[in-house]
Amino acid sequence: MSDIRFDLGKNIVETAKQSGVPAFTSNDVNGLIWYSINDIPPQIEALYTRPGFEIQWRDLFAFTLRADRKRSEDLLVQNVTLQHRADFKNDADAQAFVMQTIAQFTQGRWKRAYPDDVARLTGRSSLLDERGKINSYAASPDPAYAMSLEDWTELMRLGANWRWSGDGILAKLAASAVGNNPDGSPSYQLSLDFYIEKIWYDALEKDQQYKMKSLAENGVDTAKLIKENKEKQAARKKILEENAIKRGDKVLGG
Image (cartoon, rainbow, N blue to C red; front, side):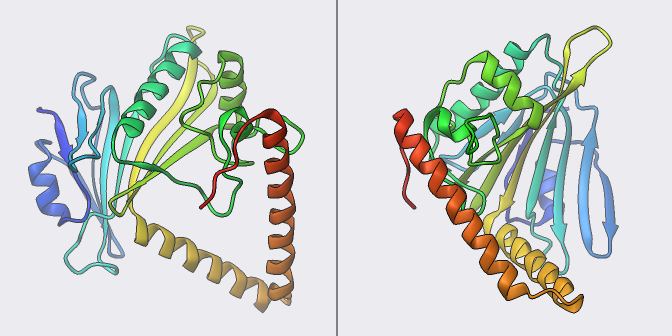
């Protein structure tokens, strides 16, 4: 088996043929199509090939291509998932690998992306909630911040997602610690996803519309709920931004 090469936005069958993978397991469930391979030899590298945005990963466990017939009659690849073996001797090794991955995004043409309307902060403040406790979901971890090993291990108890945007593609690196292996080494879950950005956000919007419709059908005043949620998010964001400035970190625009 040769190294795996891939991009998004092209026919899934052709993408699979050109990937370097000799054989995939394929499924088609209600028009949702995916090609996958598991237990990949650890020396095999996966390479996202888009010029200026190249990303390399090795020690993979699984690689999956996805397309949706309902969204594209041409069966264009809209999502690719790389699942890492995450076989690390200690937390420091896990952190080093994640930082090496982040460095590839930083050195390429990718731009930091954010989930929803979270506070856009730099430094350690990007890891903290309103009380100053480690909580990656309060904001969005700053990929340029070199955190201590102590902060890393605390962060991994909840897990963290780093996001980037580039050339219409959204990339998400997810990492979390899930206990210990029998030999005492830490057990991690680590994955890297690439999405066609427009499809990703369209799906989120449809999910939100469906949720609000279901709530309304059960008597919930959804307009009031949306207003209250926005106010709570704005208040929380203001606290996070004020605290970040006090620490000497920055609040980013956009």
